[in-house]
Length: 129
Picture 1 (cartoon, rainbow, N blue to C red):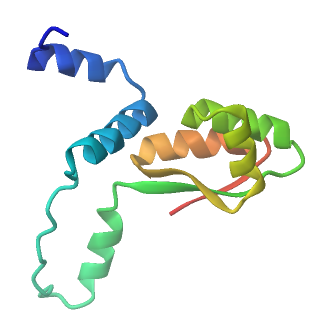
Picture 2: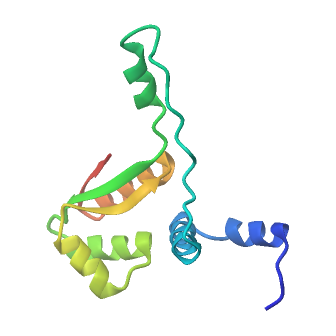
């Protein structure tokens, strides 16, 4: 296999969906025994007292999309889960039947809201955490 340049790799990543990229990162971490998570710095105690909690809530940039229930249109929900996760039919069906269950984990706010809207449009009950 020819060695790819950094620019070629970035171009390939730009063409991937967030789910595909997330699966790639997981596979990369498992293959090389590393984590892609940024190191967490220890925060100093906030000078204003209670203001720290509000800042932390506003700074949340990763969300989990949790399927609470499939509703009456389970087939449509399974189709949406398959589209969002690229799971097979059997795996998506099992995931929907096992609700409440996380469909997507640690995704950006806009991607989480789009997924929530798509699942709710199919008849599911969804929460973001």
